[in-house]
Image (tube, one colour):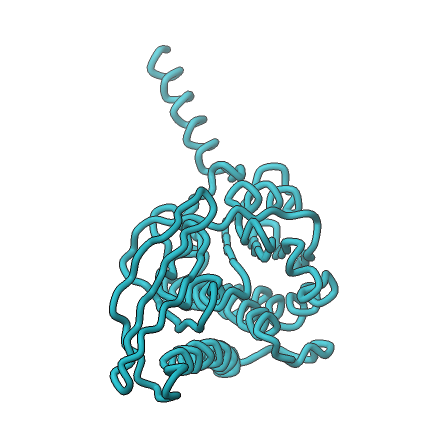
Length: 298
């Protein structure tokens, strides 16, 4: 009898384990372990290659100061309300800058057949609710209906990044499904545009304000201020052509992975994009969410 009771308890425990759903506190915040990561994919819904591409895209957006983006893909959530879940989840992570609220949270719940965007107040003018909805309907849902979650997520985030970068992608009414090649082309164009902007900024910042040649060389770097919310660094450059010394100060959010002069707000002078290195844990910028965004079902 005792064996039968024990077996029943074990079977029941296994049943509930298989049917477990996520609460906001259960979703792994991958940014804490590795500041180069922005995609939480605990159920393996997205492939490793798709996650890597999305991480790269989100990192480029953060480097340019356009947005902080977090992506979550799970099988199911407690309560079944993606809006409330996303607000609590991404709000608790502090996605976005505390100053500008430029956070974007993207939640995919496979068992509910739903994709949800939530936007911080600083993005609501750039990504209004109707535009978020159109991106989902045109670029994401056709692939999701075919259970191609990689293609849908990559296409949707690439177009969103293009909008954030000031582009004007085709957002007319959806007429058909995008091919895999078209999706890769969109992703490549957006990432290429962001990288090109970073390279251009880098070379412009190498220009000496005295002799106008592109021959500034970094000589030293010193931390001049550190608060709870930001870090301020002073970079000293010496021109190899005329010998002039140029000092520039850069202020960046705490937890920002971009430690070079392109990673934050420049206090006087120019800056250039620095990707930083390593995979030390980080955090988002303390942003918050109101109610902007949209959700779509397939």
